[in-house]
Amino acid sequence: MATQPAGIPDLIPHFIDGERVASVDGDTFGVLNPVTNEDYTVAASGKQADIDLAVAAATRAFHEGPWPRMKNRERARILSRIADIVESRDQELAQFESWDSGLPITQARGQAQRAAENFRFFADLIVAGRDDTYKVPGTQVNYVNRKPKGVAGLITPWNTPFMLESWKLGPALASGCTVVLKPAEFTPLSASLWAGIFEEAELPRGVFNLVNGFGETAGDALVKHPDVPLISFTGESSTGKLIFGNSAPHLKALSMELGGKSPAVVFADADLDAAIDSTLFGVFSLNGERCTAGSRILVERSIYEEFLERYAERAKNIVVGDPADPKTEVGALVHPEHFDKVMSYVEIGKGEGRLLAGGGRPEGFPEGNYVAPTVFADVAPDARIFQEEIFGPVVAITPFDSDEEALELANNTKYGLAAYIWTNNLKRAHLFSQNVEAGMVWLNSHNVRDLRSPFGGVKASGLGHEGGYRSLDFYSDQQAVHITLGDVHTTRFGASAH
Ligand code: NAD
Image (cartoon, rainbow, N blue to C red; front, side, top):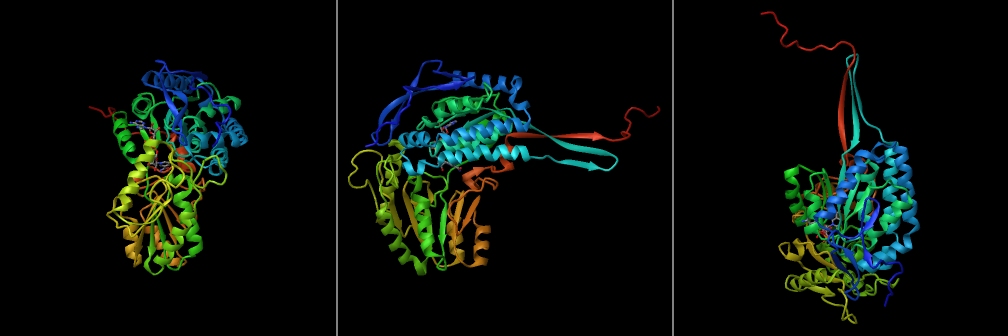
């Protein structure tokens, strides 16, 4: 079994105004390893008082510090330094992430690369950025004065935690905001690396603040804090609704990246080998704990049985094991609470579909949060395993007979995050892609990201789109400044003779 990586602190502290600090009330919570389910350290448990201190520091840094006022090139230099440092810590980060979240080590590697790229990309974007000017010849010039919105509240989930934190930190900092990050309570370890990374990159004091703790306490206090004008949230749709309501009295700007139940649609004319590789990876990579997982596979009837046979055989061969073992393809789920949730869906699925692979704990793993890759076929659209996000290594497969039926099935959930379409018919490919209710479509493609393109979901999967300039827009105000050239012509109130 894996040994604990070196360098894990006895207490994972908050980071407020450049200092590593315990909670004001001294409270902590246990942080467990998902292979043993034993606590290996504790983290400071933040409450209102800690959030108040963090927001005060971020507010000071915003109003009095250099960060929002720096030239874009200067900010970009620091962001690029952050990217270099993040990249250089790939090994350490992968070990921390795998240890804390149960992610297979080979899949945890490369997360630092992606995180670094999020800083490098937004550094480039602000240097190359431009804003609009509108001329009314001889009369007026109007221009956009872009400025950072203020203290950004960033709330993140436990799946690929470090990378998802970088997806918010990169554009928030690039825009000139100062931030308070509240990472997920299941996985606070990798977030503790940020403090050292930002110190080394010489990010000014107070620009980055981090408060650990539970959603109901630390997260809630951040959402309700009057001095935090915007919240960027990634997590479950139900939490998103709660945060939406709690932000309403303050009319906060919200960006929400929420849950998914994304369809992968395989037509008979598809490259079946590629579709099978991709649909397996799409739901079983990252332990199935992936927002864009293709967790419903819709297959055209004429290839349905062949697809099932080949898919199930591969699923049975997936290597489940210790997250630290480089041979492992599916590791341990993040937490026993989440394990219980996923297992309850496995049991529900047994009454809703035909079990082709998995269906419980894998053999030889009596302990730890291990779930065998599980495949259900013949799943009806009203089944719970078709409709509800499981967020684990469980897939529902359903046949279809026509393009219309495929589209109806694809759109038949409350979610709309991603869709994967496999066909070699050009017209069908584009028509289907354009009509499917999903924020992002991958056509004959595996889930690859282009940081310039929109990222986000529709329906219950999100609110707003980030990605490229859209992210900078979210963290900025675009003030319109209007200037008259020449004479001012105003209707003269109060100037008429009595
Ligand atoms: P979650 O909603 O339980 O928690 C997310 C974060 O919100 C955590 O930091 C939590 O402490 C905090 N939180 C919880 N209650 C809160 C409250 N009342 N006020 C403020 N903050 C609160 O989600 P999770 O279980 O950590 O993550 C899994 C979910 O995230 C899945 O639904 C997944 O699809 C979604 N997700 C979406 C995307 C995307 O880009 N759309 C990406 C990754 C994960």
